[in-house]
Length: 286
Image (cartoon, rainbow, N blue to C red; front, side, top):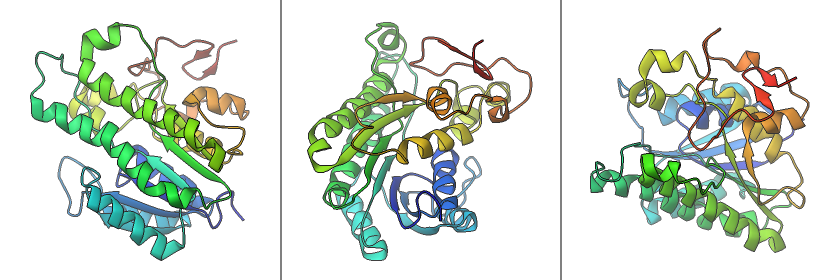
């Protein structure tokens, strides 16, 4: 039996990229995965739909429940959670994966793009987590995991892209808030963020194209890190903002060369990460 055998995951997003990688990883260890996303038909710019993702999750060994919906809509979130509970009997893990990004400076960002990021990143994470909470409280191994960064007061994150920073720090603050208030109910809440940029459609389409993609790590590093966190005892693992390679090092995984999207190139640090710390591109520094 896998680590997540019989456990039910509810995820926002998940039809591609990091979310799908996490879903496949947990499914390979026996999880049921319900996910709510907007992509019902193929988009030439964005590979994957809820239907292709469901097939991949089931091929990995889990049970999939693809749900067409929009986490900006409260009724859509409520309905998706109800469908998940009806199908699988409960929810053990809530993953806030859906996200919108625009790195424009405050003076250049259209209001509608500001609203999109706040509504998906911060408000969406809040709506999804709150809807899952009654069911998480009934689980004996409940986790909330948000793909959001460590909180950092360095003004450079505001000077460059304050709106995006607000939305992602908002996700982290809300997640840590849930961790503080829900510990008494046995529900853990943590954040996870990558050391480097990850090979996703956002990087390809918005952040640098093929050149940037050659300097990324694969979504697998986030999936493996998430699995390590979600396998831990909620009572002793809550209120943290984790970095992916640090999680893997604690689990004894120190050779990260296999996570490179392409050989050779100098990896690009992600936003909200100041440096390599005790790590190098392919593992802990020696």
